[in-house]
Image 1 (cartoon, rainbow, N blue to C red):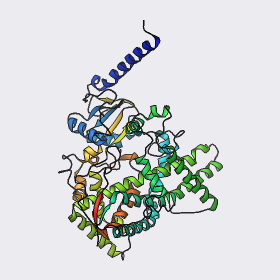
Image 2: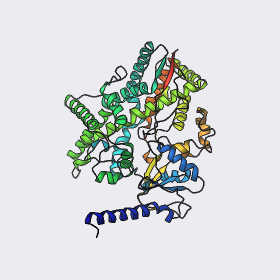
Image 3: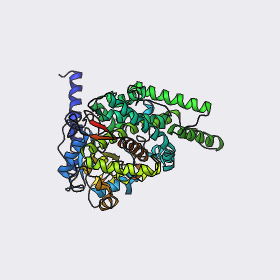
Image 4: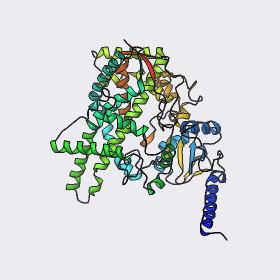
Length: 507
């Protein structure tokens, strides 16, 4: 006779086997192309150790592209569809957006308030917050913050000069230096706080920024589970950020808001815009009957939006800037052409970098675009099907709840769309060349109504950083420069694993 425990274990194992069999035969039963999954890991065995997300996506993309508009995959125990057809990608992001407006990102506002940011919100919550925040990232608002970024750019070049005095071989690690620049930019523009991380690499803001990526709350596997099974993770009351990170940013934001409101302090930054938004919501709630006070911005919502401005802004922009400098060092002819454009533009404004002058630098725009093509910060985009979706011109149906994955890195490196894709060639992004390509072959900021809301700001601070450096310094490869560059497999963003060491020569 089996004991109760033995019977329970046998029943549990049988149920688990049945569940996994039913799960991992899902695409086969529907006649969809698929790659045989591993139990529990699906098609993602080795992720974080042997492979990055981009590596796995790339394998599947190359194996199945052209055979079907999508391939059935399993992201651990989550059914997903890797999209390989450009027209289907355009439908998902733009034409049929109403059925694909959610990203399936983890948010657990009650237990982890910083996860309640725009990027993670869904449905009407996302729509309402996007509507509120869109004016914050208008061209007029960018111009509003431009002078603050230029001032930090001046500190950037001064700091680099001071570091060179202490470096006889003129070799500097540029990734961290770029991150210190963008930390100071975001600190000023989002919080109105002088972070001084350029002068002090161990400033509190810089430390907390590093720790978001270097000291995560969970292992890589648990993080991926949290992101790919957000509903289950929320039911388990899981958190994404360590408590000390949450406490630090909540405290900073609360103190800043309370001080500014009490003393009527006005600043040219993101925080001021949120305070004005909160005051406007409260005024409407007081004077309009039937308005629910909960529709106004709460302190937690303000904290979450400011945090994601910092979290998404400093790391993505600094990494893009570092990758651009790396490619410019490897391609000195491109670097000289860009520097010539910068110097000619600055000559027209008597050496002063203006908002208009920056936007007129067409070759700088092409260099940035090519950098983001080769090194898209996110390997893929994710959209969740709201309702069953009939894939056009096929018999396939993407059922409600399926995670659709758009492999941005794979598309950016597809030789069908970009000849010699690993070659750094800014000329790919002249207006004439861009018109020749399908709009969905370039997606570093996503596309459609849910594209990156901070795109203008991110590009602006990256460009200011590059102009600030290139007008005074030349960058060259050194014996310590890693060629080819190894990317970190444990970081979900694209980032150099071993830093980025370049020779810096004053002009």
